Every structure is written in structure tokens, then in C-alpha cells.
Image (cartoon, rainbow, N blue to C red; front, side, top):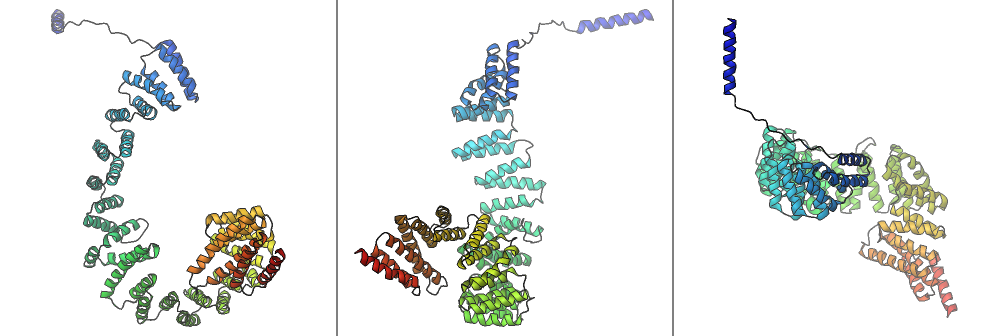
Length: 633
């Protein structure tokens, strides 16, 4: 048996040997190790680069390539450091050599691209590099972004779209990259491509309202109003028709859609009552939030149509009638508003509707009718009522517009007695004394308001300004200066305070350099303000620079006289304008007097007396001017 086994084993080995081909061993060339000196210089360069010593690194790398001119690593490192110190032109050649040695190295191609685009300004070759990077690393979106920037800058729309197509075509591309492409498609008005991307993503994420909104925007932009409307309505229906920070943009788009009469009529024919009701509310908000007249009227007309549609089915609905009346009042259709408020009151009288009627009369400046309504409301309304504040303020303002300051003060005093914690009533009470120039009564009312309005900076500024001018008029100069300085510490750009303090100093001939800077700051904010121009002229007068003074005072007179010409004679600001003109003419007369121009001075004093005939100081100046002129002659 042992012999037989050995024979079989020998036979099998022989057969196996006979079937194998003959193998000839060839010598494999060994890789040549890098030159030791090249390695030394390269390591030194890396240490220098890590230490931020770019110039030293560049020097070591230049030495390294002298020993080894076949290393892509050395050339790439040299290009990288040259780019880092903005020696882009010098970086072009080493980057090109590195690519020749290692053409598939993406990082080196980026170095070459930056050197070309920033150094040689060779955009064509730079674009070739970007296209090569895209082929080598198709998921590298930074290369696509660079291409997009270049083509956008050149205005090459078709090439931009081609790049976007390439981004979308990348296998396994994420939603973020696709959305990036969709936004750019939309910007380029390639709406169909953008819409298709949004639809594709929505198939996997159908409840994504942000994407649905973008799809609606795209559809609306390409004129598919019906599809856009359906998508916007789907969003707000999922949000239970609420108006929130998230849904406001959707409602705005729906308003734009329904601004077309046919679309709004079609909406009225549908049974979606909640949409119609909420659309009316949104439109009312947009009317009150817009300053552009045409937009306000557009939204007001739409809101009125919605309200009229609702009133067709419920013509005696008091809430709808009141809402419509307020809308009409907001757009100054006072007679229609009054009629609608009265209709609403027929369903049950409400204070807010009477207030609306009174406001309609106030808009028309029919003070007597407004006063009659407000006086009755004031008698019948308790101080705890939610309408008490508005009634008191409105009634006092009606009295003030008729120069019935004592009556207005009485209303505010009653309000303060009933609501002593109400800073608004206390402030307005103090202001009634300002109207009467009773500074001593105003000051003790204004002073406690400083502490009570600390948390309301805007309100505090009003209190400080009125207190400052009251103190100045009461002869408390130093305290007035301190108050104005505090106000300017809160708001250094407060033009009125800057001018007032500057003029105070100029009047006393003190700190004139500071006064000039303060008034110039006020003029920077309001360069055509006659009072500020007068103040600067008066500073120059005090500096004895009479020609400069005359120039600024002439400008002030031009501005103020033009303002007076354009102002309704019955306007409450007329008295203030006449007072300003009296002061400016007096200043101009004083300046002309100092310059020896008695004729011009006489003219200005005469004009000042026309605006302020009871001013005895002016009359004395005019009388003395005649003596000075005679003496000069």
C-alpha cells in the first residue's frame, strides 16, 4: 500500500508540473529614492510654512527643486506658498510643472487655477482648469461655483444654465445642492427647470411648506397663476388659515393674485368662507401698514370688496359694518365712514363707533361736531373703560385746535386725578402750560416724569427737551444746559436739542466754538431748517464774522418766508413761523447795523416789527438806528 501511494503521488506531481507554463522572472526597476538634500530643504520649508515664514519656505523649496526636478510635491508646495503671499504670477510655472508630473491631483489644479486667474488674469485657461477639476472630482461644488461666478459676470446665461444642469445631473445629489440650482434657475427665469426640481423634492417630502411656497413663487413668476394659487392655499389650509410670521409671505402672494378682479370674483364664488374672511383681515392690516398711497388704495379697495361680499349674506352684521367704517375712515372717506358707523350703531350703540364718527369730524376739521360727541362720551364714560384714554386725548386735542387751552388742561387734569400713574396724561398736562408759556407751572410737572419714563427712551427724550427749554425760558440757564447735555448723551443726533443748546450758548456769547459745532450737527440732520440756519448765523455774529452771519441769515429768511407762503393761514404752525421770522429779521438787522448798512438794517427791523408788532425792544432798535444813521451822515 505504501508503495502504491508513493506512485500515485509521484504521478500527480508530474501531471501538475507538465500543465504549468514556464515563468521567466524579469527584473523590476527600483524606485529612485528622493535626493537627501531635496528632502532636507523640503522639511525645512514645511517647518517655516507652519511658523508662517512664507518667504523662508519659498527659498527652501526653490533649493529643493534644484536637487529634484521630478517631484510634483515640491512644485505644488512652492506654488501654494507663492499664492499665499499673493505672488500669483510666480506661482503659475511651479503649479504647471506639478500638474505635468501629477495631472490627476485636484489640489494642485486649484493652485494653478488661482495663480492663473489672479496672476495672469488668464480667464480662458482658468476655466479649462475648472472644467478639468469638475471631471476629476464631479462632486466638488466649489468648482461649479467658480464657473457660475465667471459666467454670471460675463452675462453668459446659457453657460450658467449648462453648469446648473451639470450640478443637477450629479448622481446621488443632495436636496441642498438641487435647491441651490433651483434658486439660480429661477433667477435666470428658467422657471420650468426650477419648478421641476421643487416637484421632484416634494415627492419625497410632500409636507414641506417652504418648498411648496418656492414652487408657488416659481409658478406665479412664469404666469401659471392657477397652480400658484392652489399651492399657496394648500399651505395656509395646513396652517389653519392663521396669519403668523411663517404664513405672512404666503398671504402676501395670495393678495397679489387676488388683486386681479377676475381671480377675486372667482374666489367669491367658492365655498371657502374661512379663506375669504381671513383675506379681508390681511388686507385691512396691509392698508394700515402701507405708506405708499397707491398701494394703500389698492388694498383698501380689495378689502372693501371683501367686506361688501360678506355683508351681502349678513347685511346687519355689526362687526363687519364697524370694520368697514374704520377702513373708510383710514382712507379719508369720512362721509361714507360716518354713514357706516351710524348703520352699525343701529344694531346697538357702541362707544368705539361714536369715537369713529368724532374722528371723521376731526379729519374734516369740524371741531364743533367732534367736540359735541366727545364731550358726551367723556361725561358718560368711566375712567376704568378701555376707551377712556382715547376719549380724553381726542377731546383735549379738539380743544387745543380751537385754542381753548384751559379746557384742554381741565380734561388732562381730570385724567391725571383719575389715573395718576398714566405718564401720558401728566406729560400732556405739562404741555398745556408750555402753550401758555407758563414755564414755572410746567417745570414741576415735567421733572418727575424723567424717572417715570426711564424705560421709554423716546418718551424720555420728549420730556427732557420740554424740560430743558422750560428751564431756559424760566432763566435757569445752568440747569437747562445740564438737561440738554443729558438728552444729547442719549441721542447725539437729536437735531432740536443740538440747535437749542447751541443757540443758548450763542445768545450769551459763551463757548462759541462748541455752539457752532452743535448747530452744524443739527444742520447736518436738517440742512433746510430756517431756525437752525438762523442759529448758525447768530453764532457768526457773536464771533464778529458779520459777512458770514449775513449769508446764513439770508438763507434762513429765504427758507422761512417760503415756508410761510406755502402754509395755510389757518394752520396752527403759522404763529410759530411768524415768531421765527421776527427773530431772524432782528438778527439780520443787528448784523447789517454792525456792518454799517443802515438802510438794510432798517428794512429788517421794519419787517421784524411787522411779524411782532408788540415787541418794544425792536421798536427801540429801529428808533436808535435812525439816530445812528443821522450821526453817521
